[in-house]
Image (cartoon, rainbow, N blue to C red; front, side):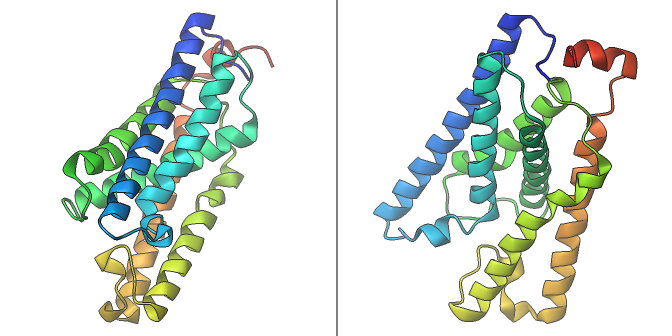
Length: 216
């Protein structure tokens, strides 16, 4: 449902999301062009990083919802669900990078700051503050898993075939047991982040939620 905020505020929120989307895509494009100039032009390597993949499709989701809000149009439920999954994935990106592997990678520090700090923080604040979404059904929480599972399977296969992995904690040399434990830890973290995202949609009292979400 379209939010019951004043039209100018709705448009401003939409413009902010669209601006963030353009900024993220521009940063990714610049970083890829920089990598290509240095001889690392393989897009499967560049977008093999969970950070880069998540940032790209999060930007697409933010951009799409931003355009809808600018036009004062309703955000469909499936797009809200996609944004919820994106926010959960970005939380994991921020926690893993800043908590476990800070300062790693070959990108300039400012690029890492944008993708690993600024973007996750913006996504969380936008989700918590802007009420253009109805409560996400708990039965849909499992939807935070398919994309990360597919990403991880591809990474593990590549690690065993061409030897490329995006992160050191996924190196085949660490052994099967370590990889299994690491994978399980990531999925637990993802479900926890997803539960927080899903729960945040229920923070408003029921009598206020109808005012914020607008007519049904």
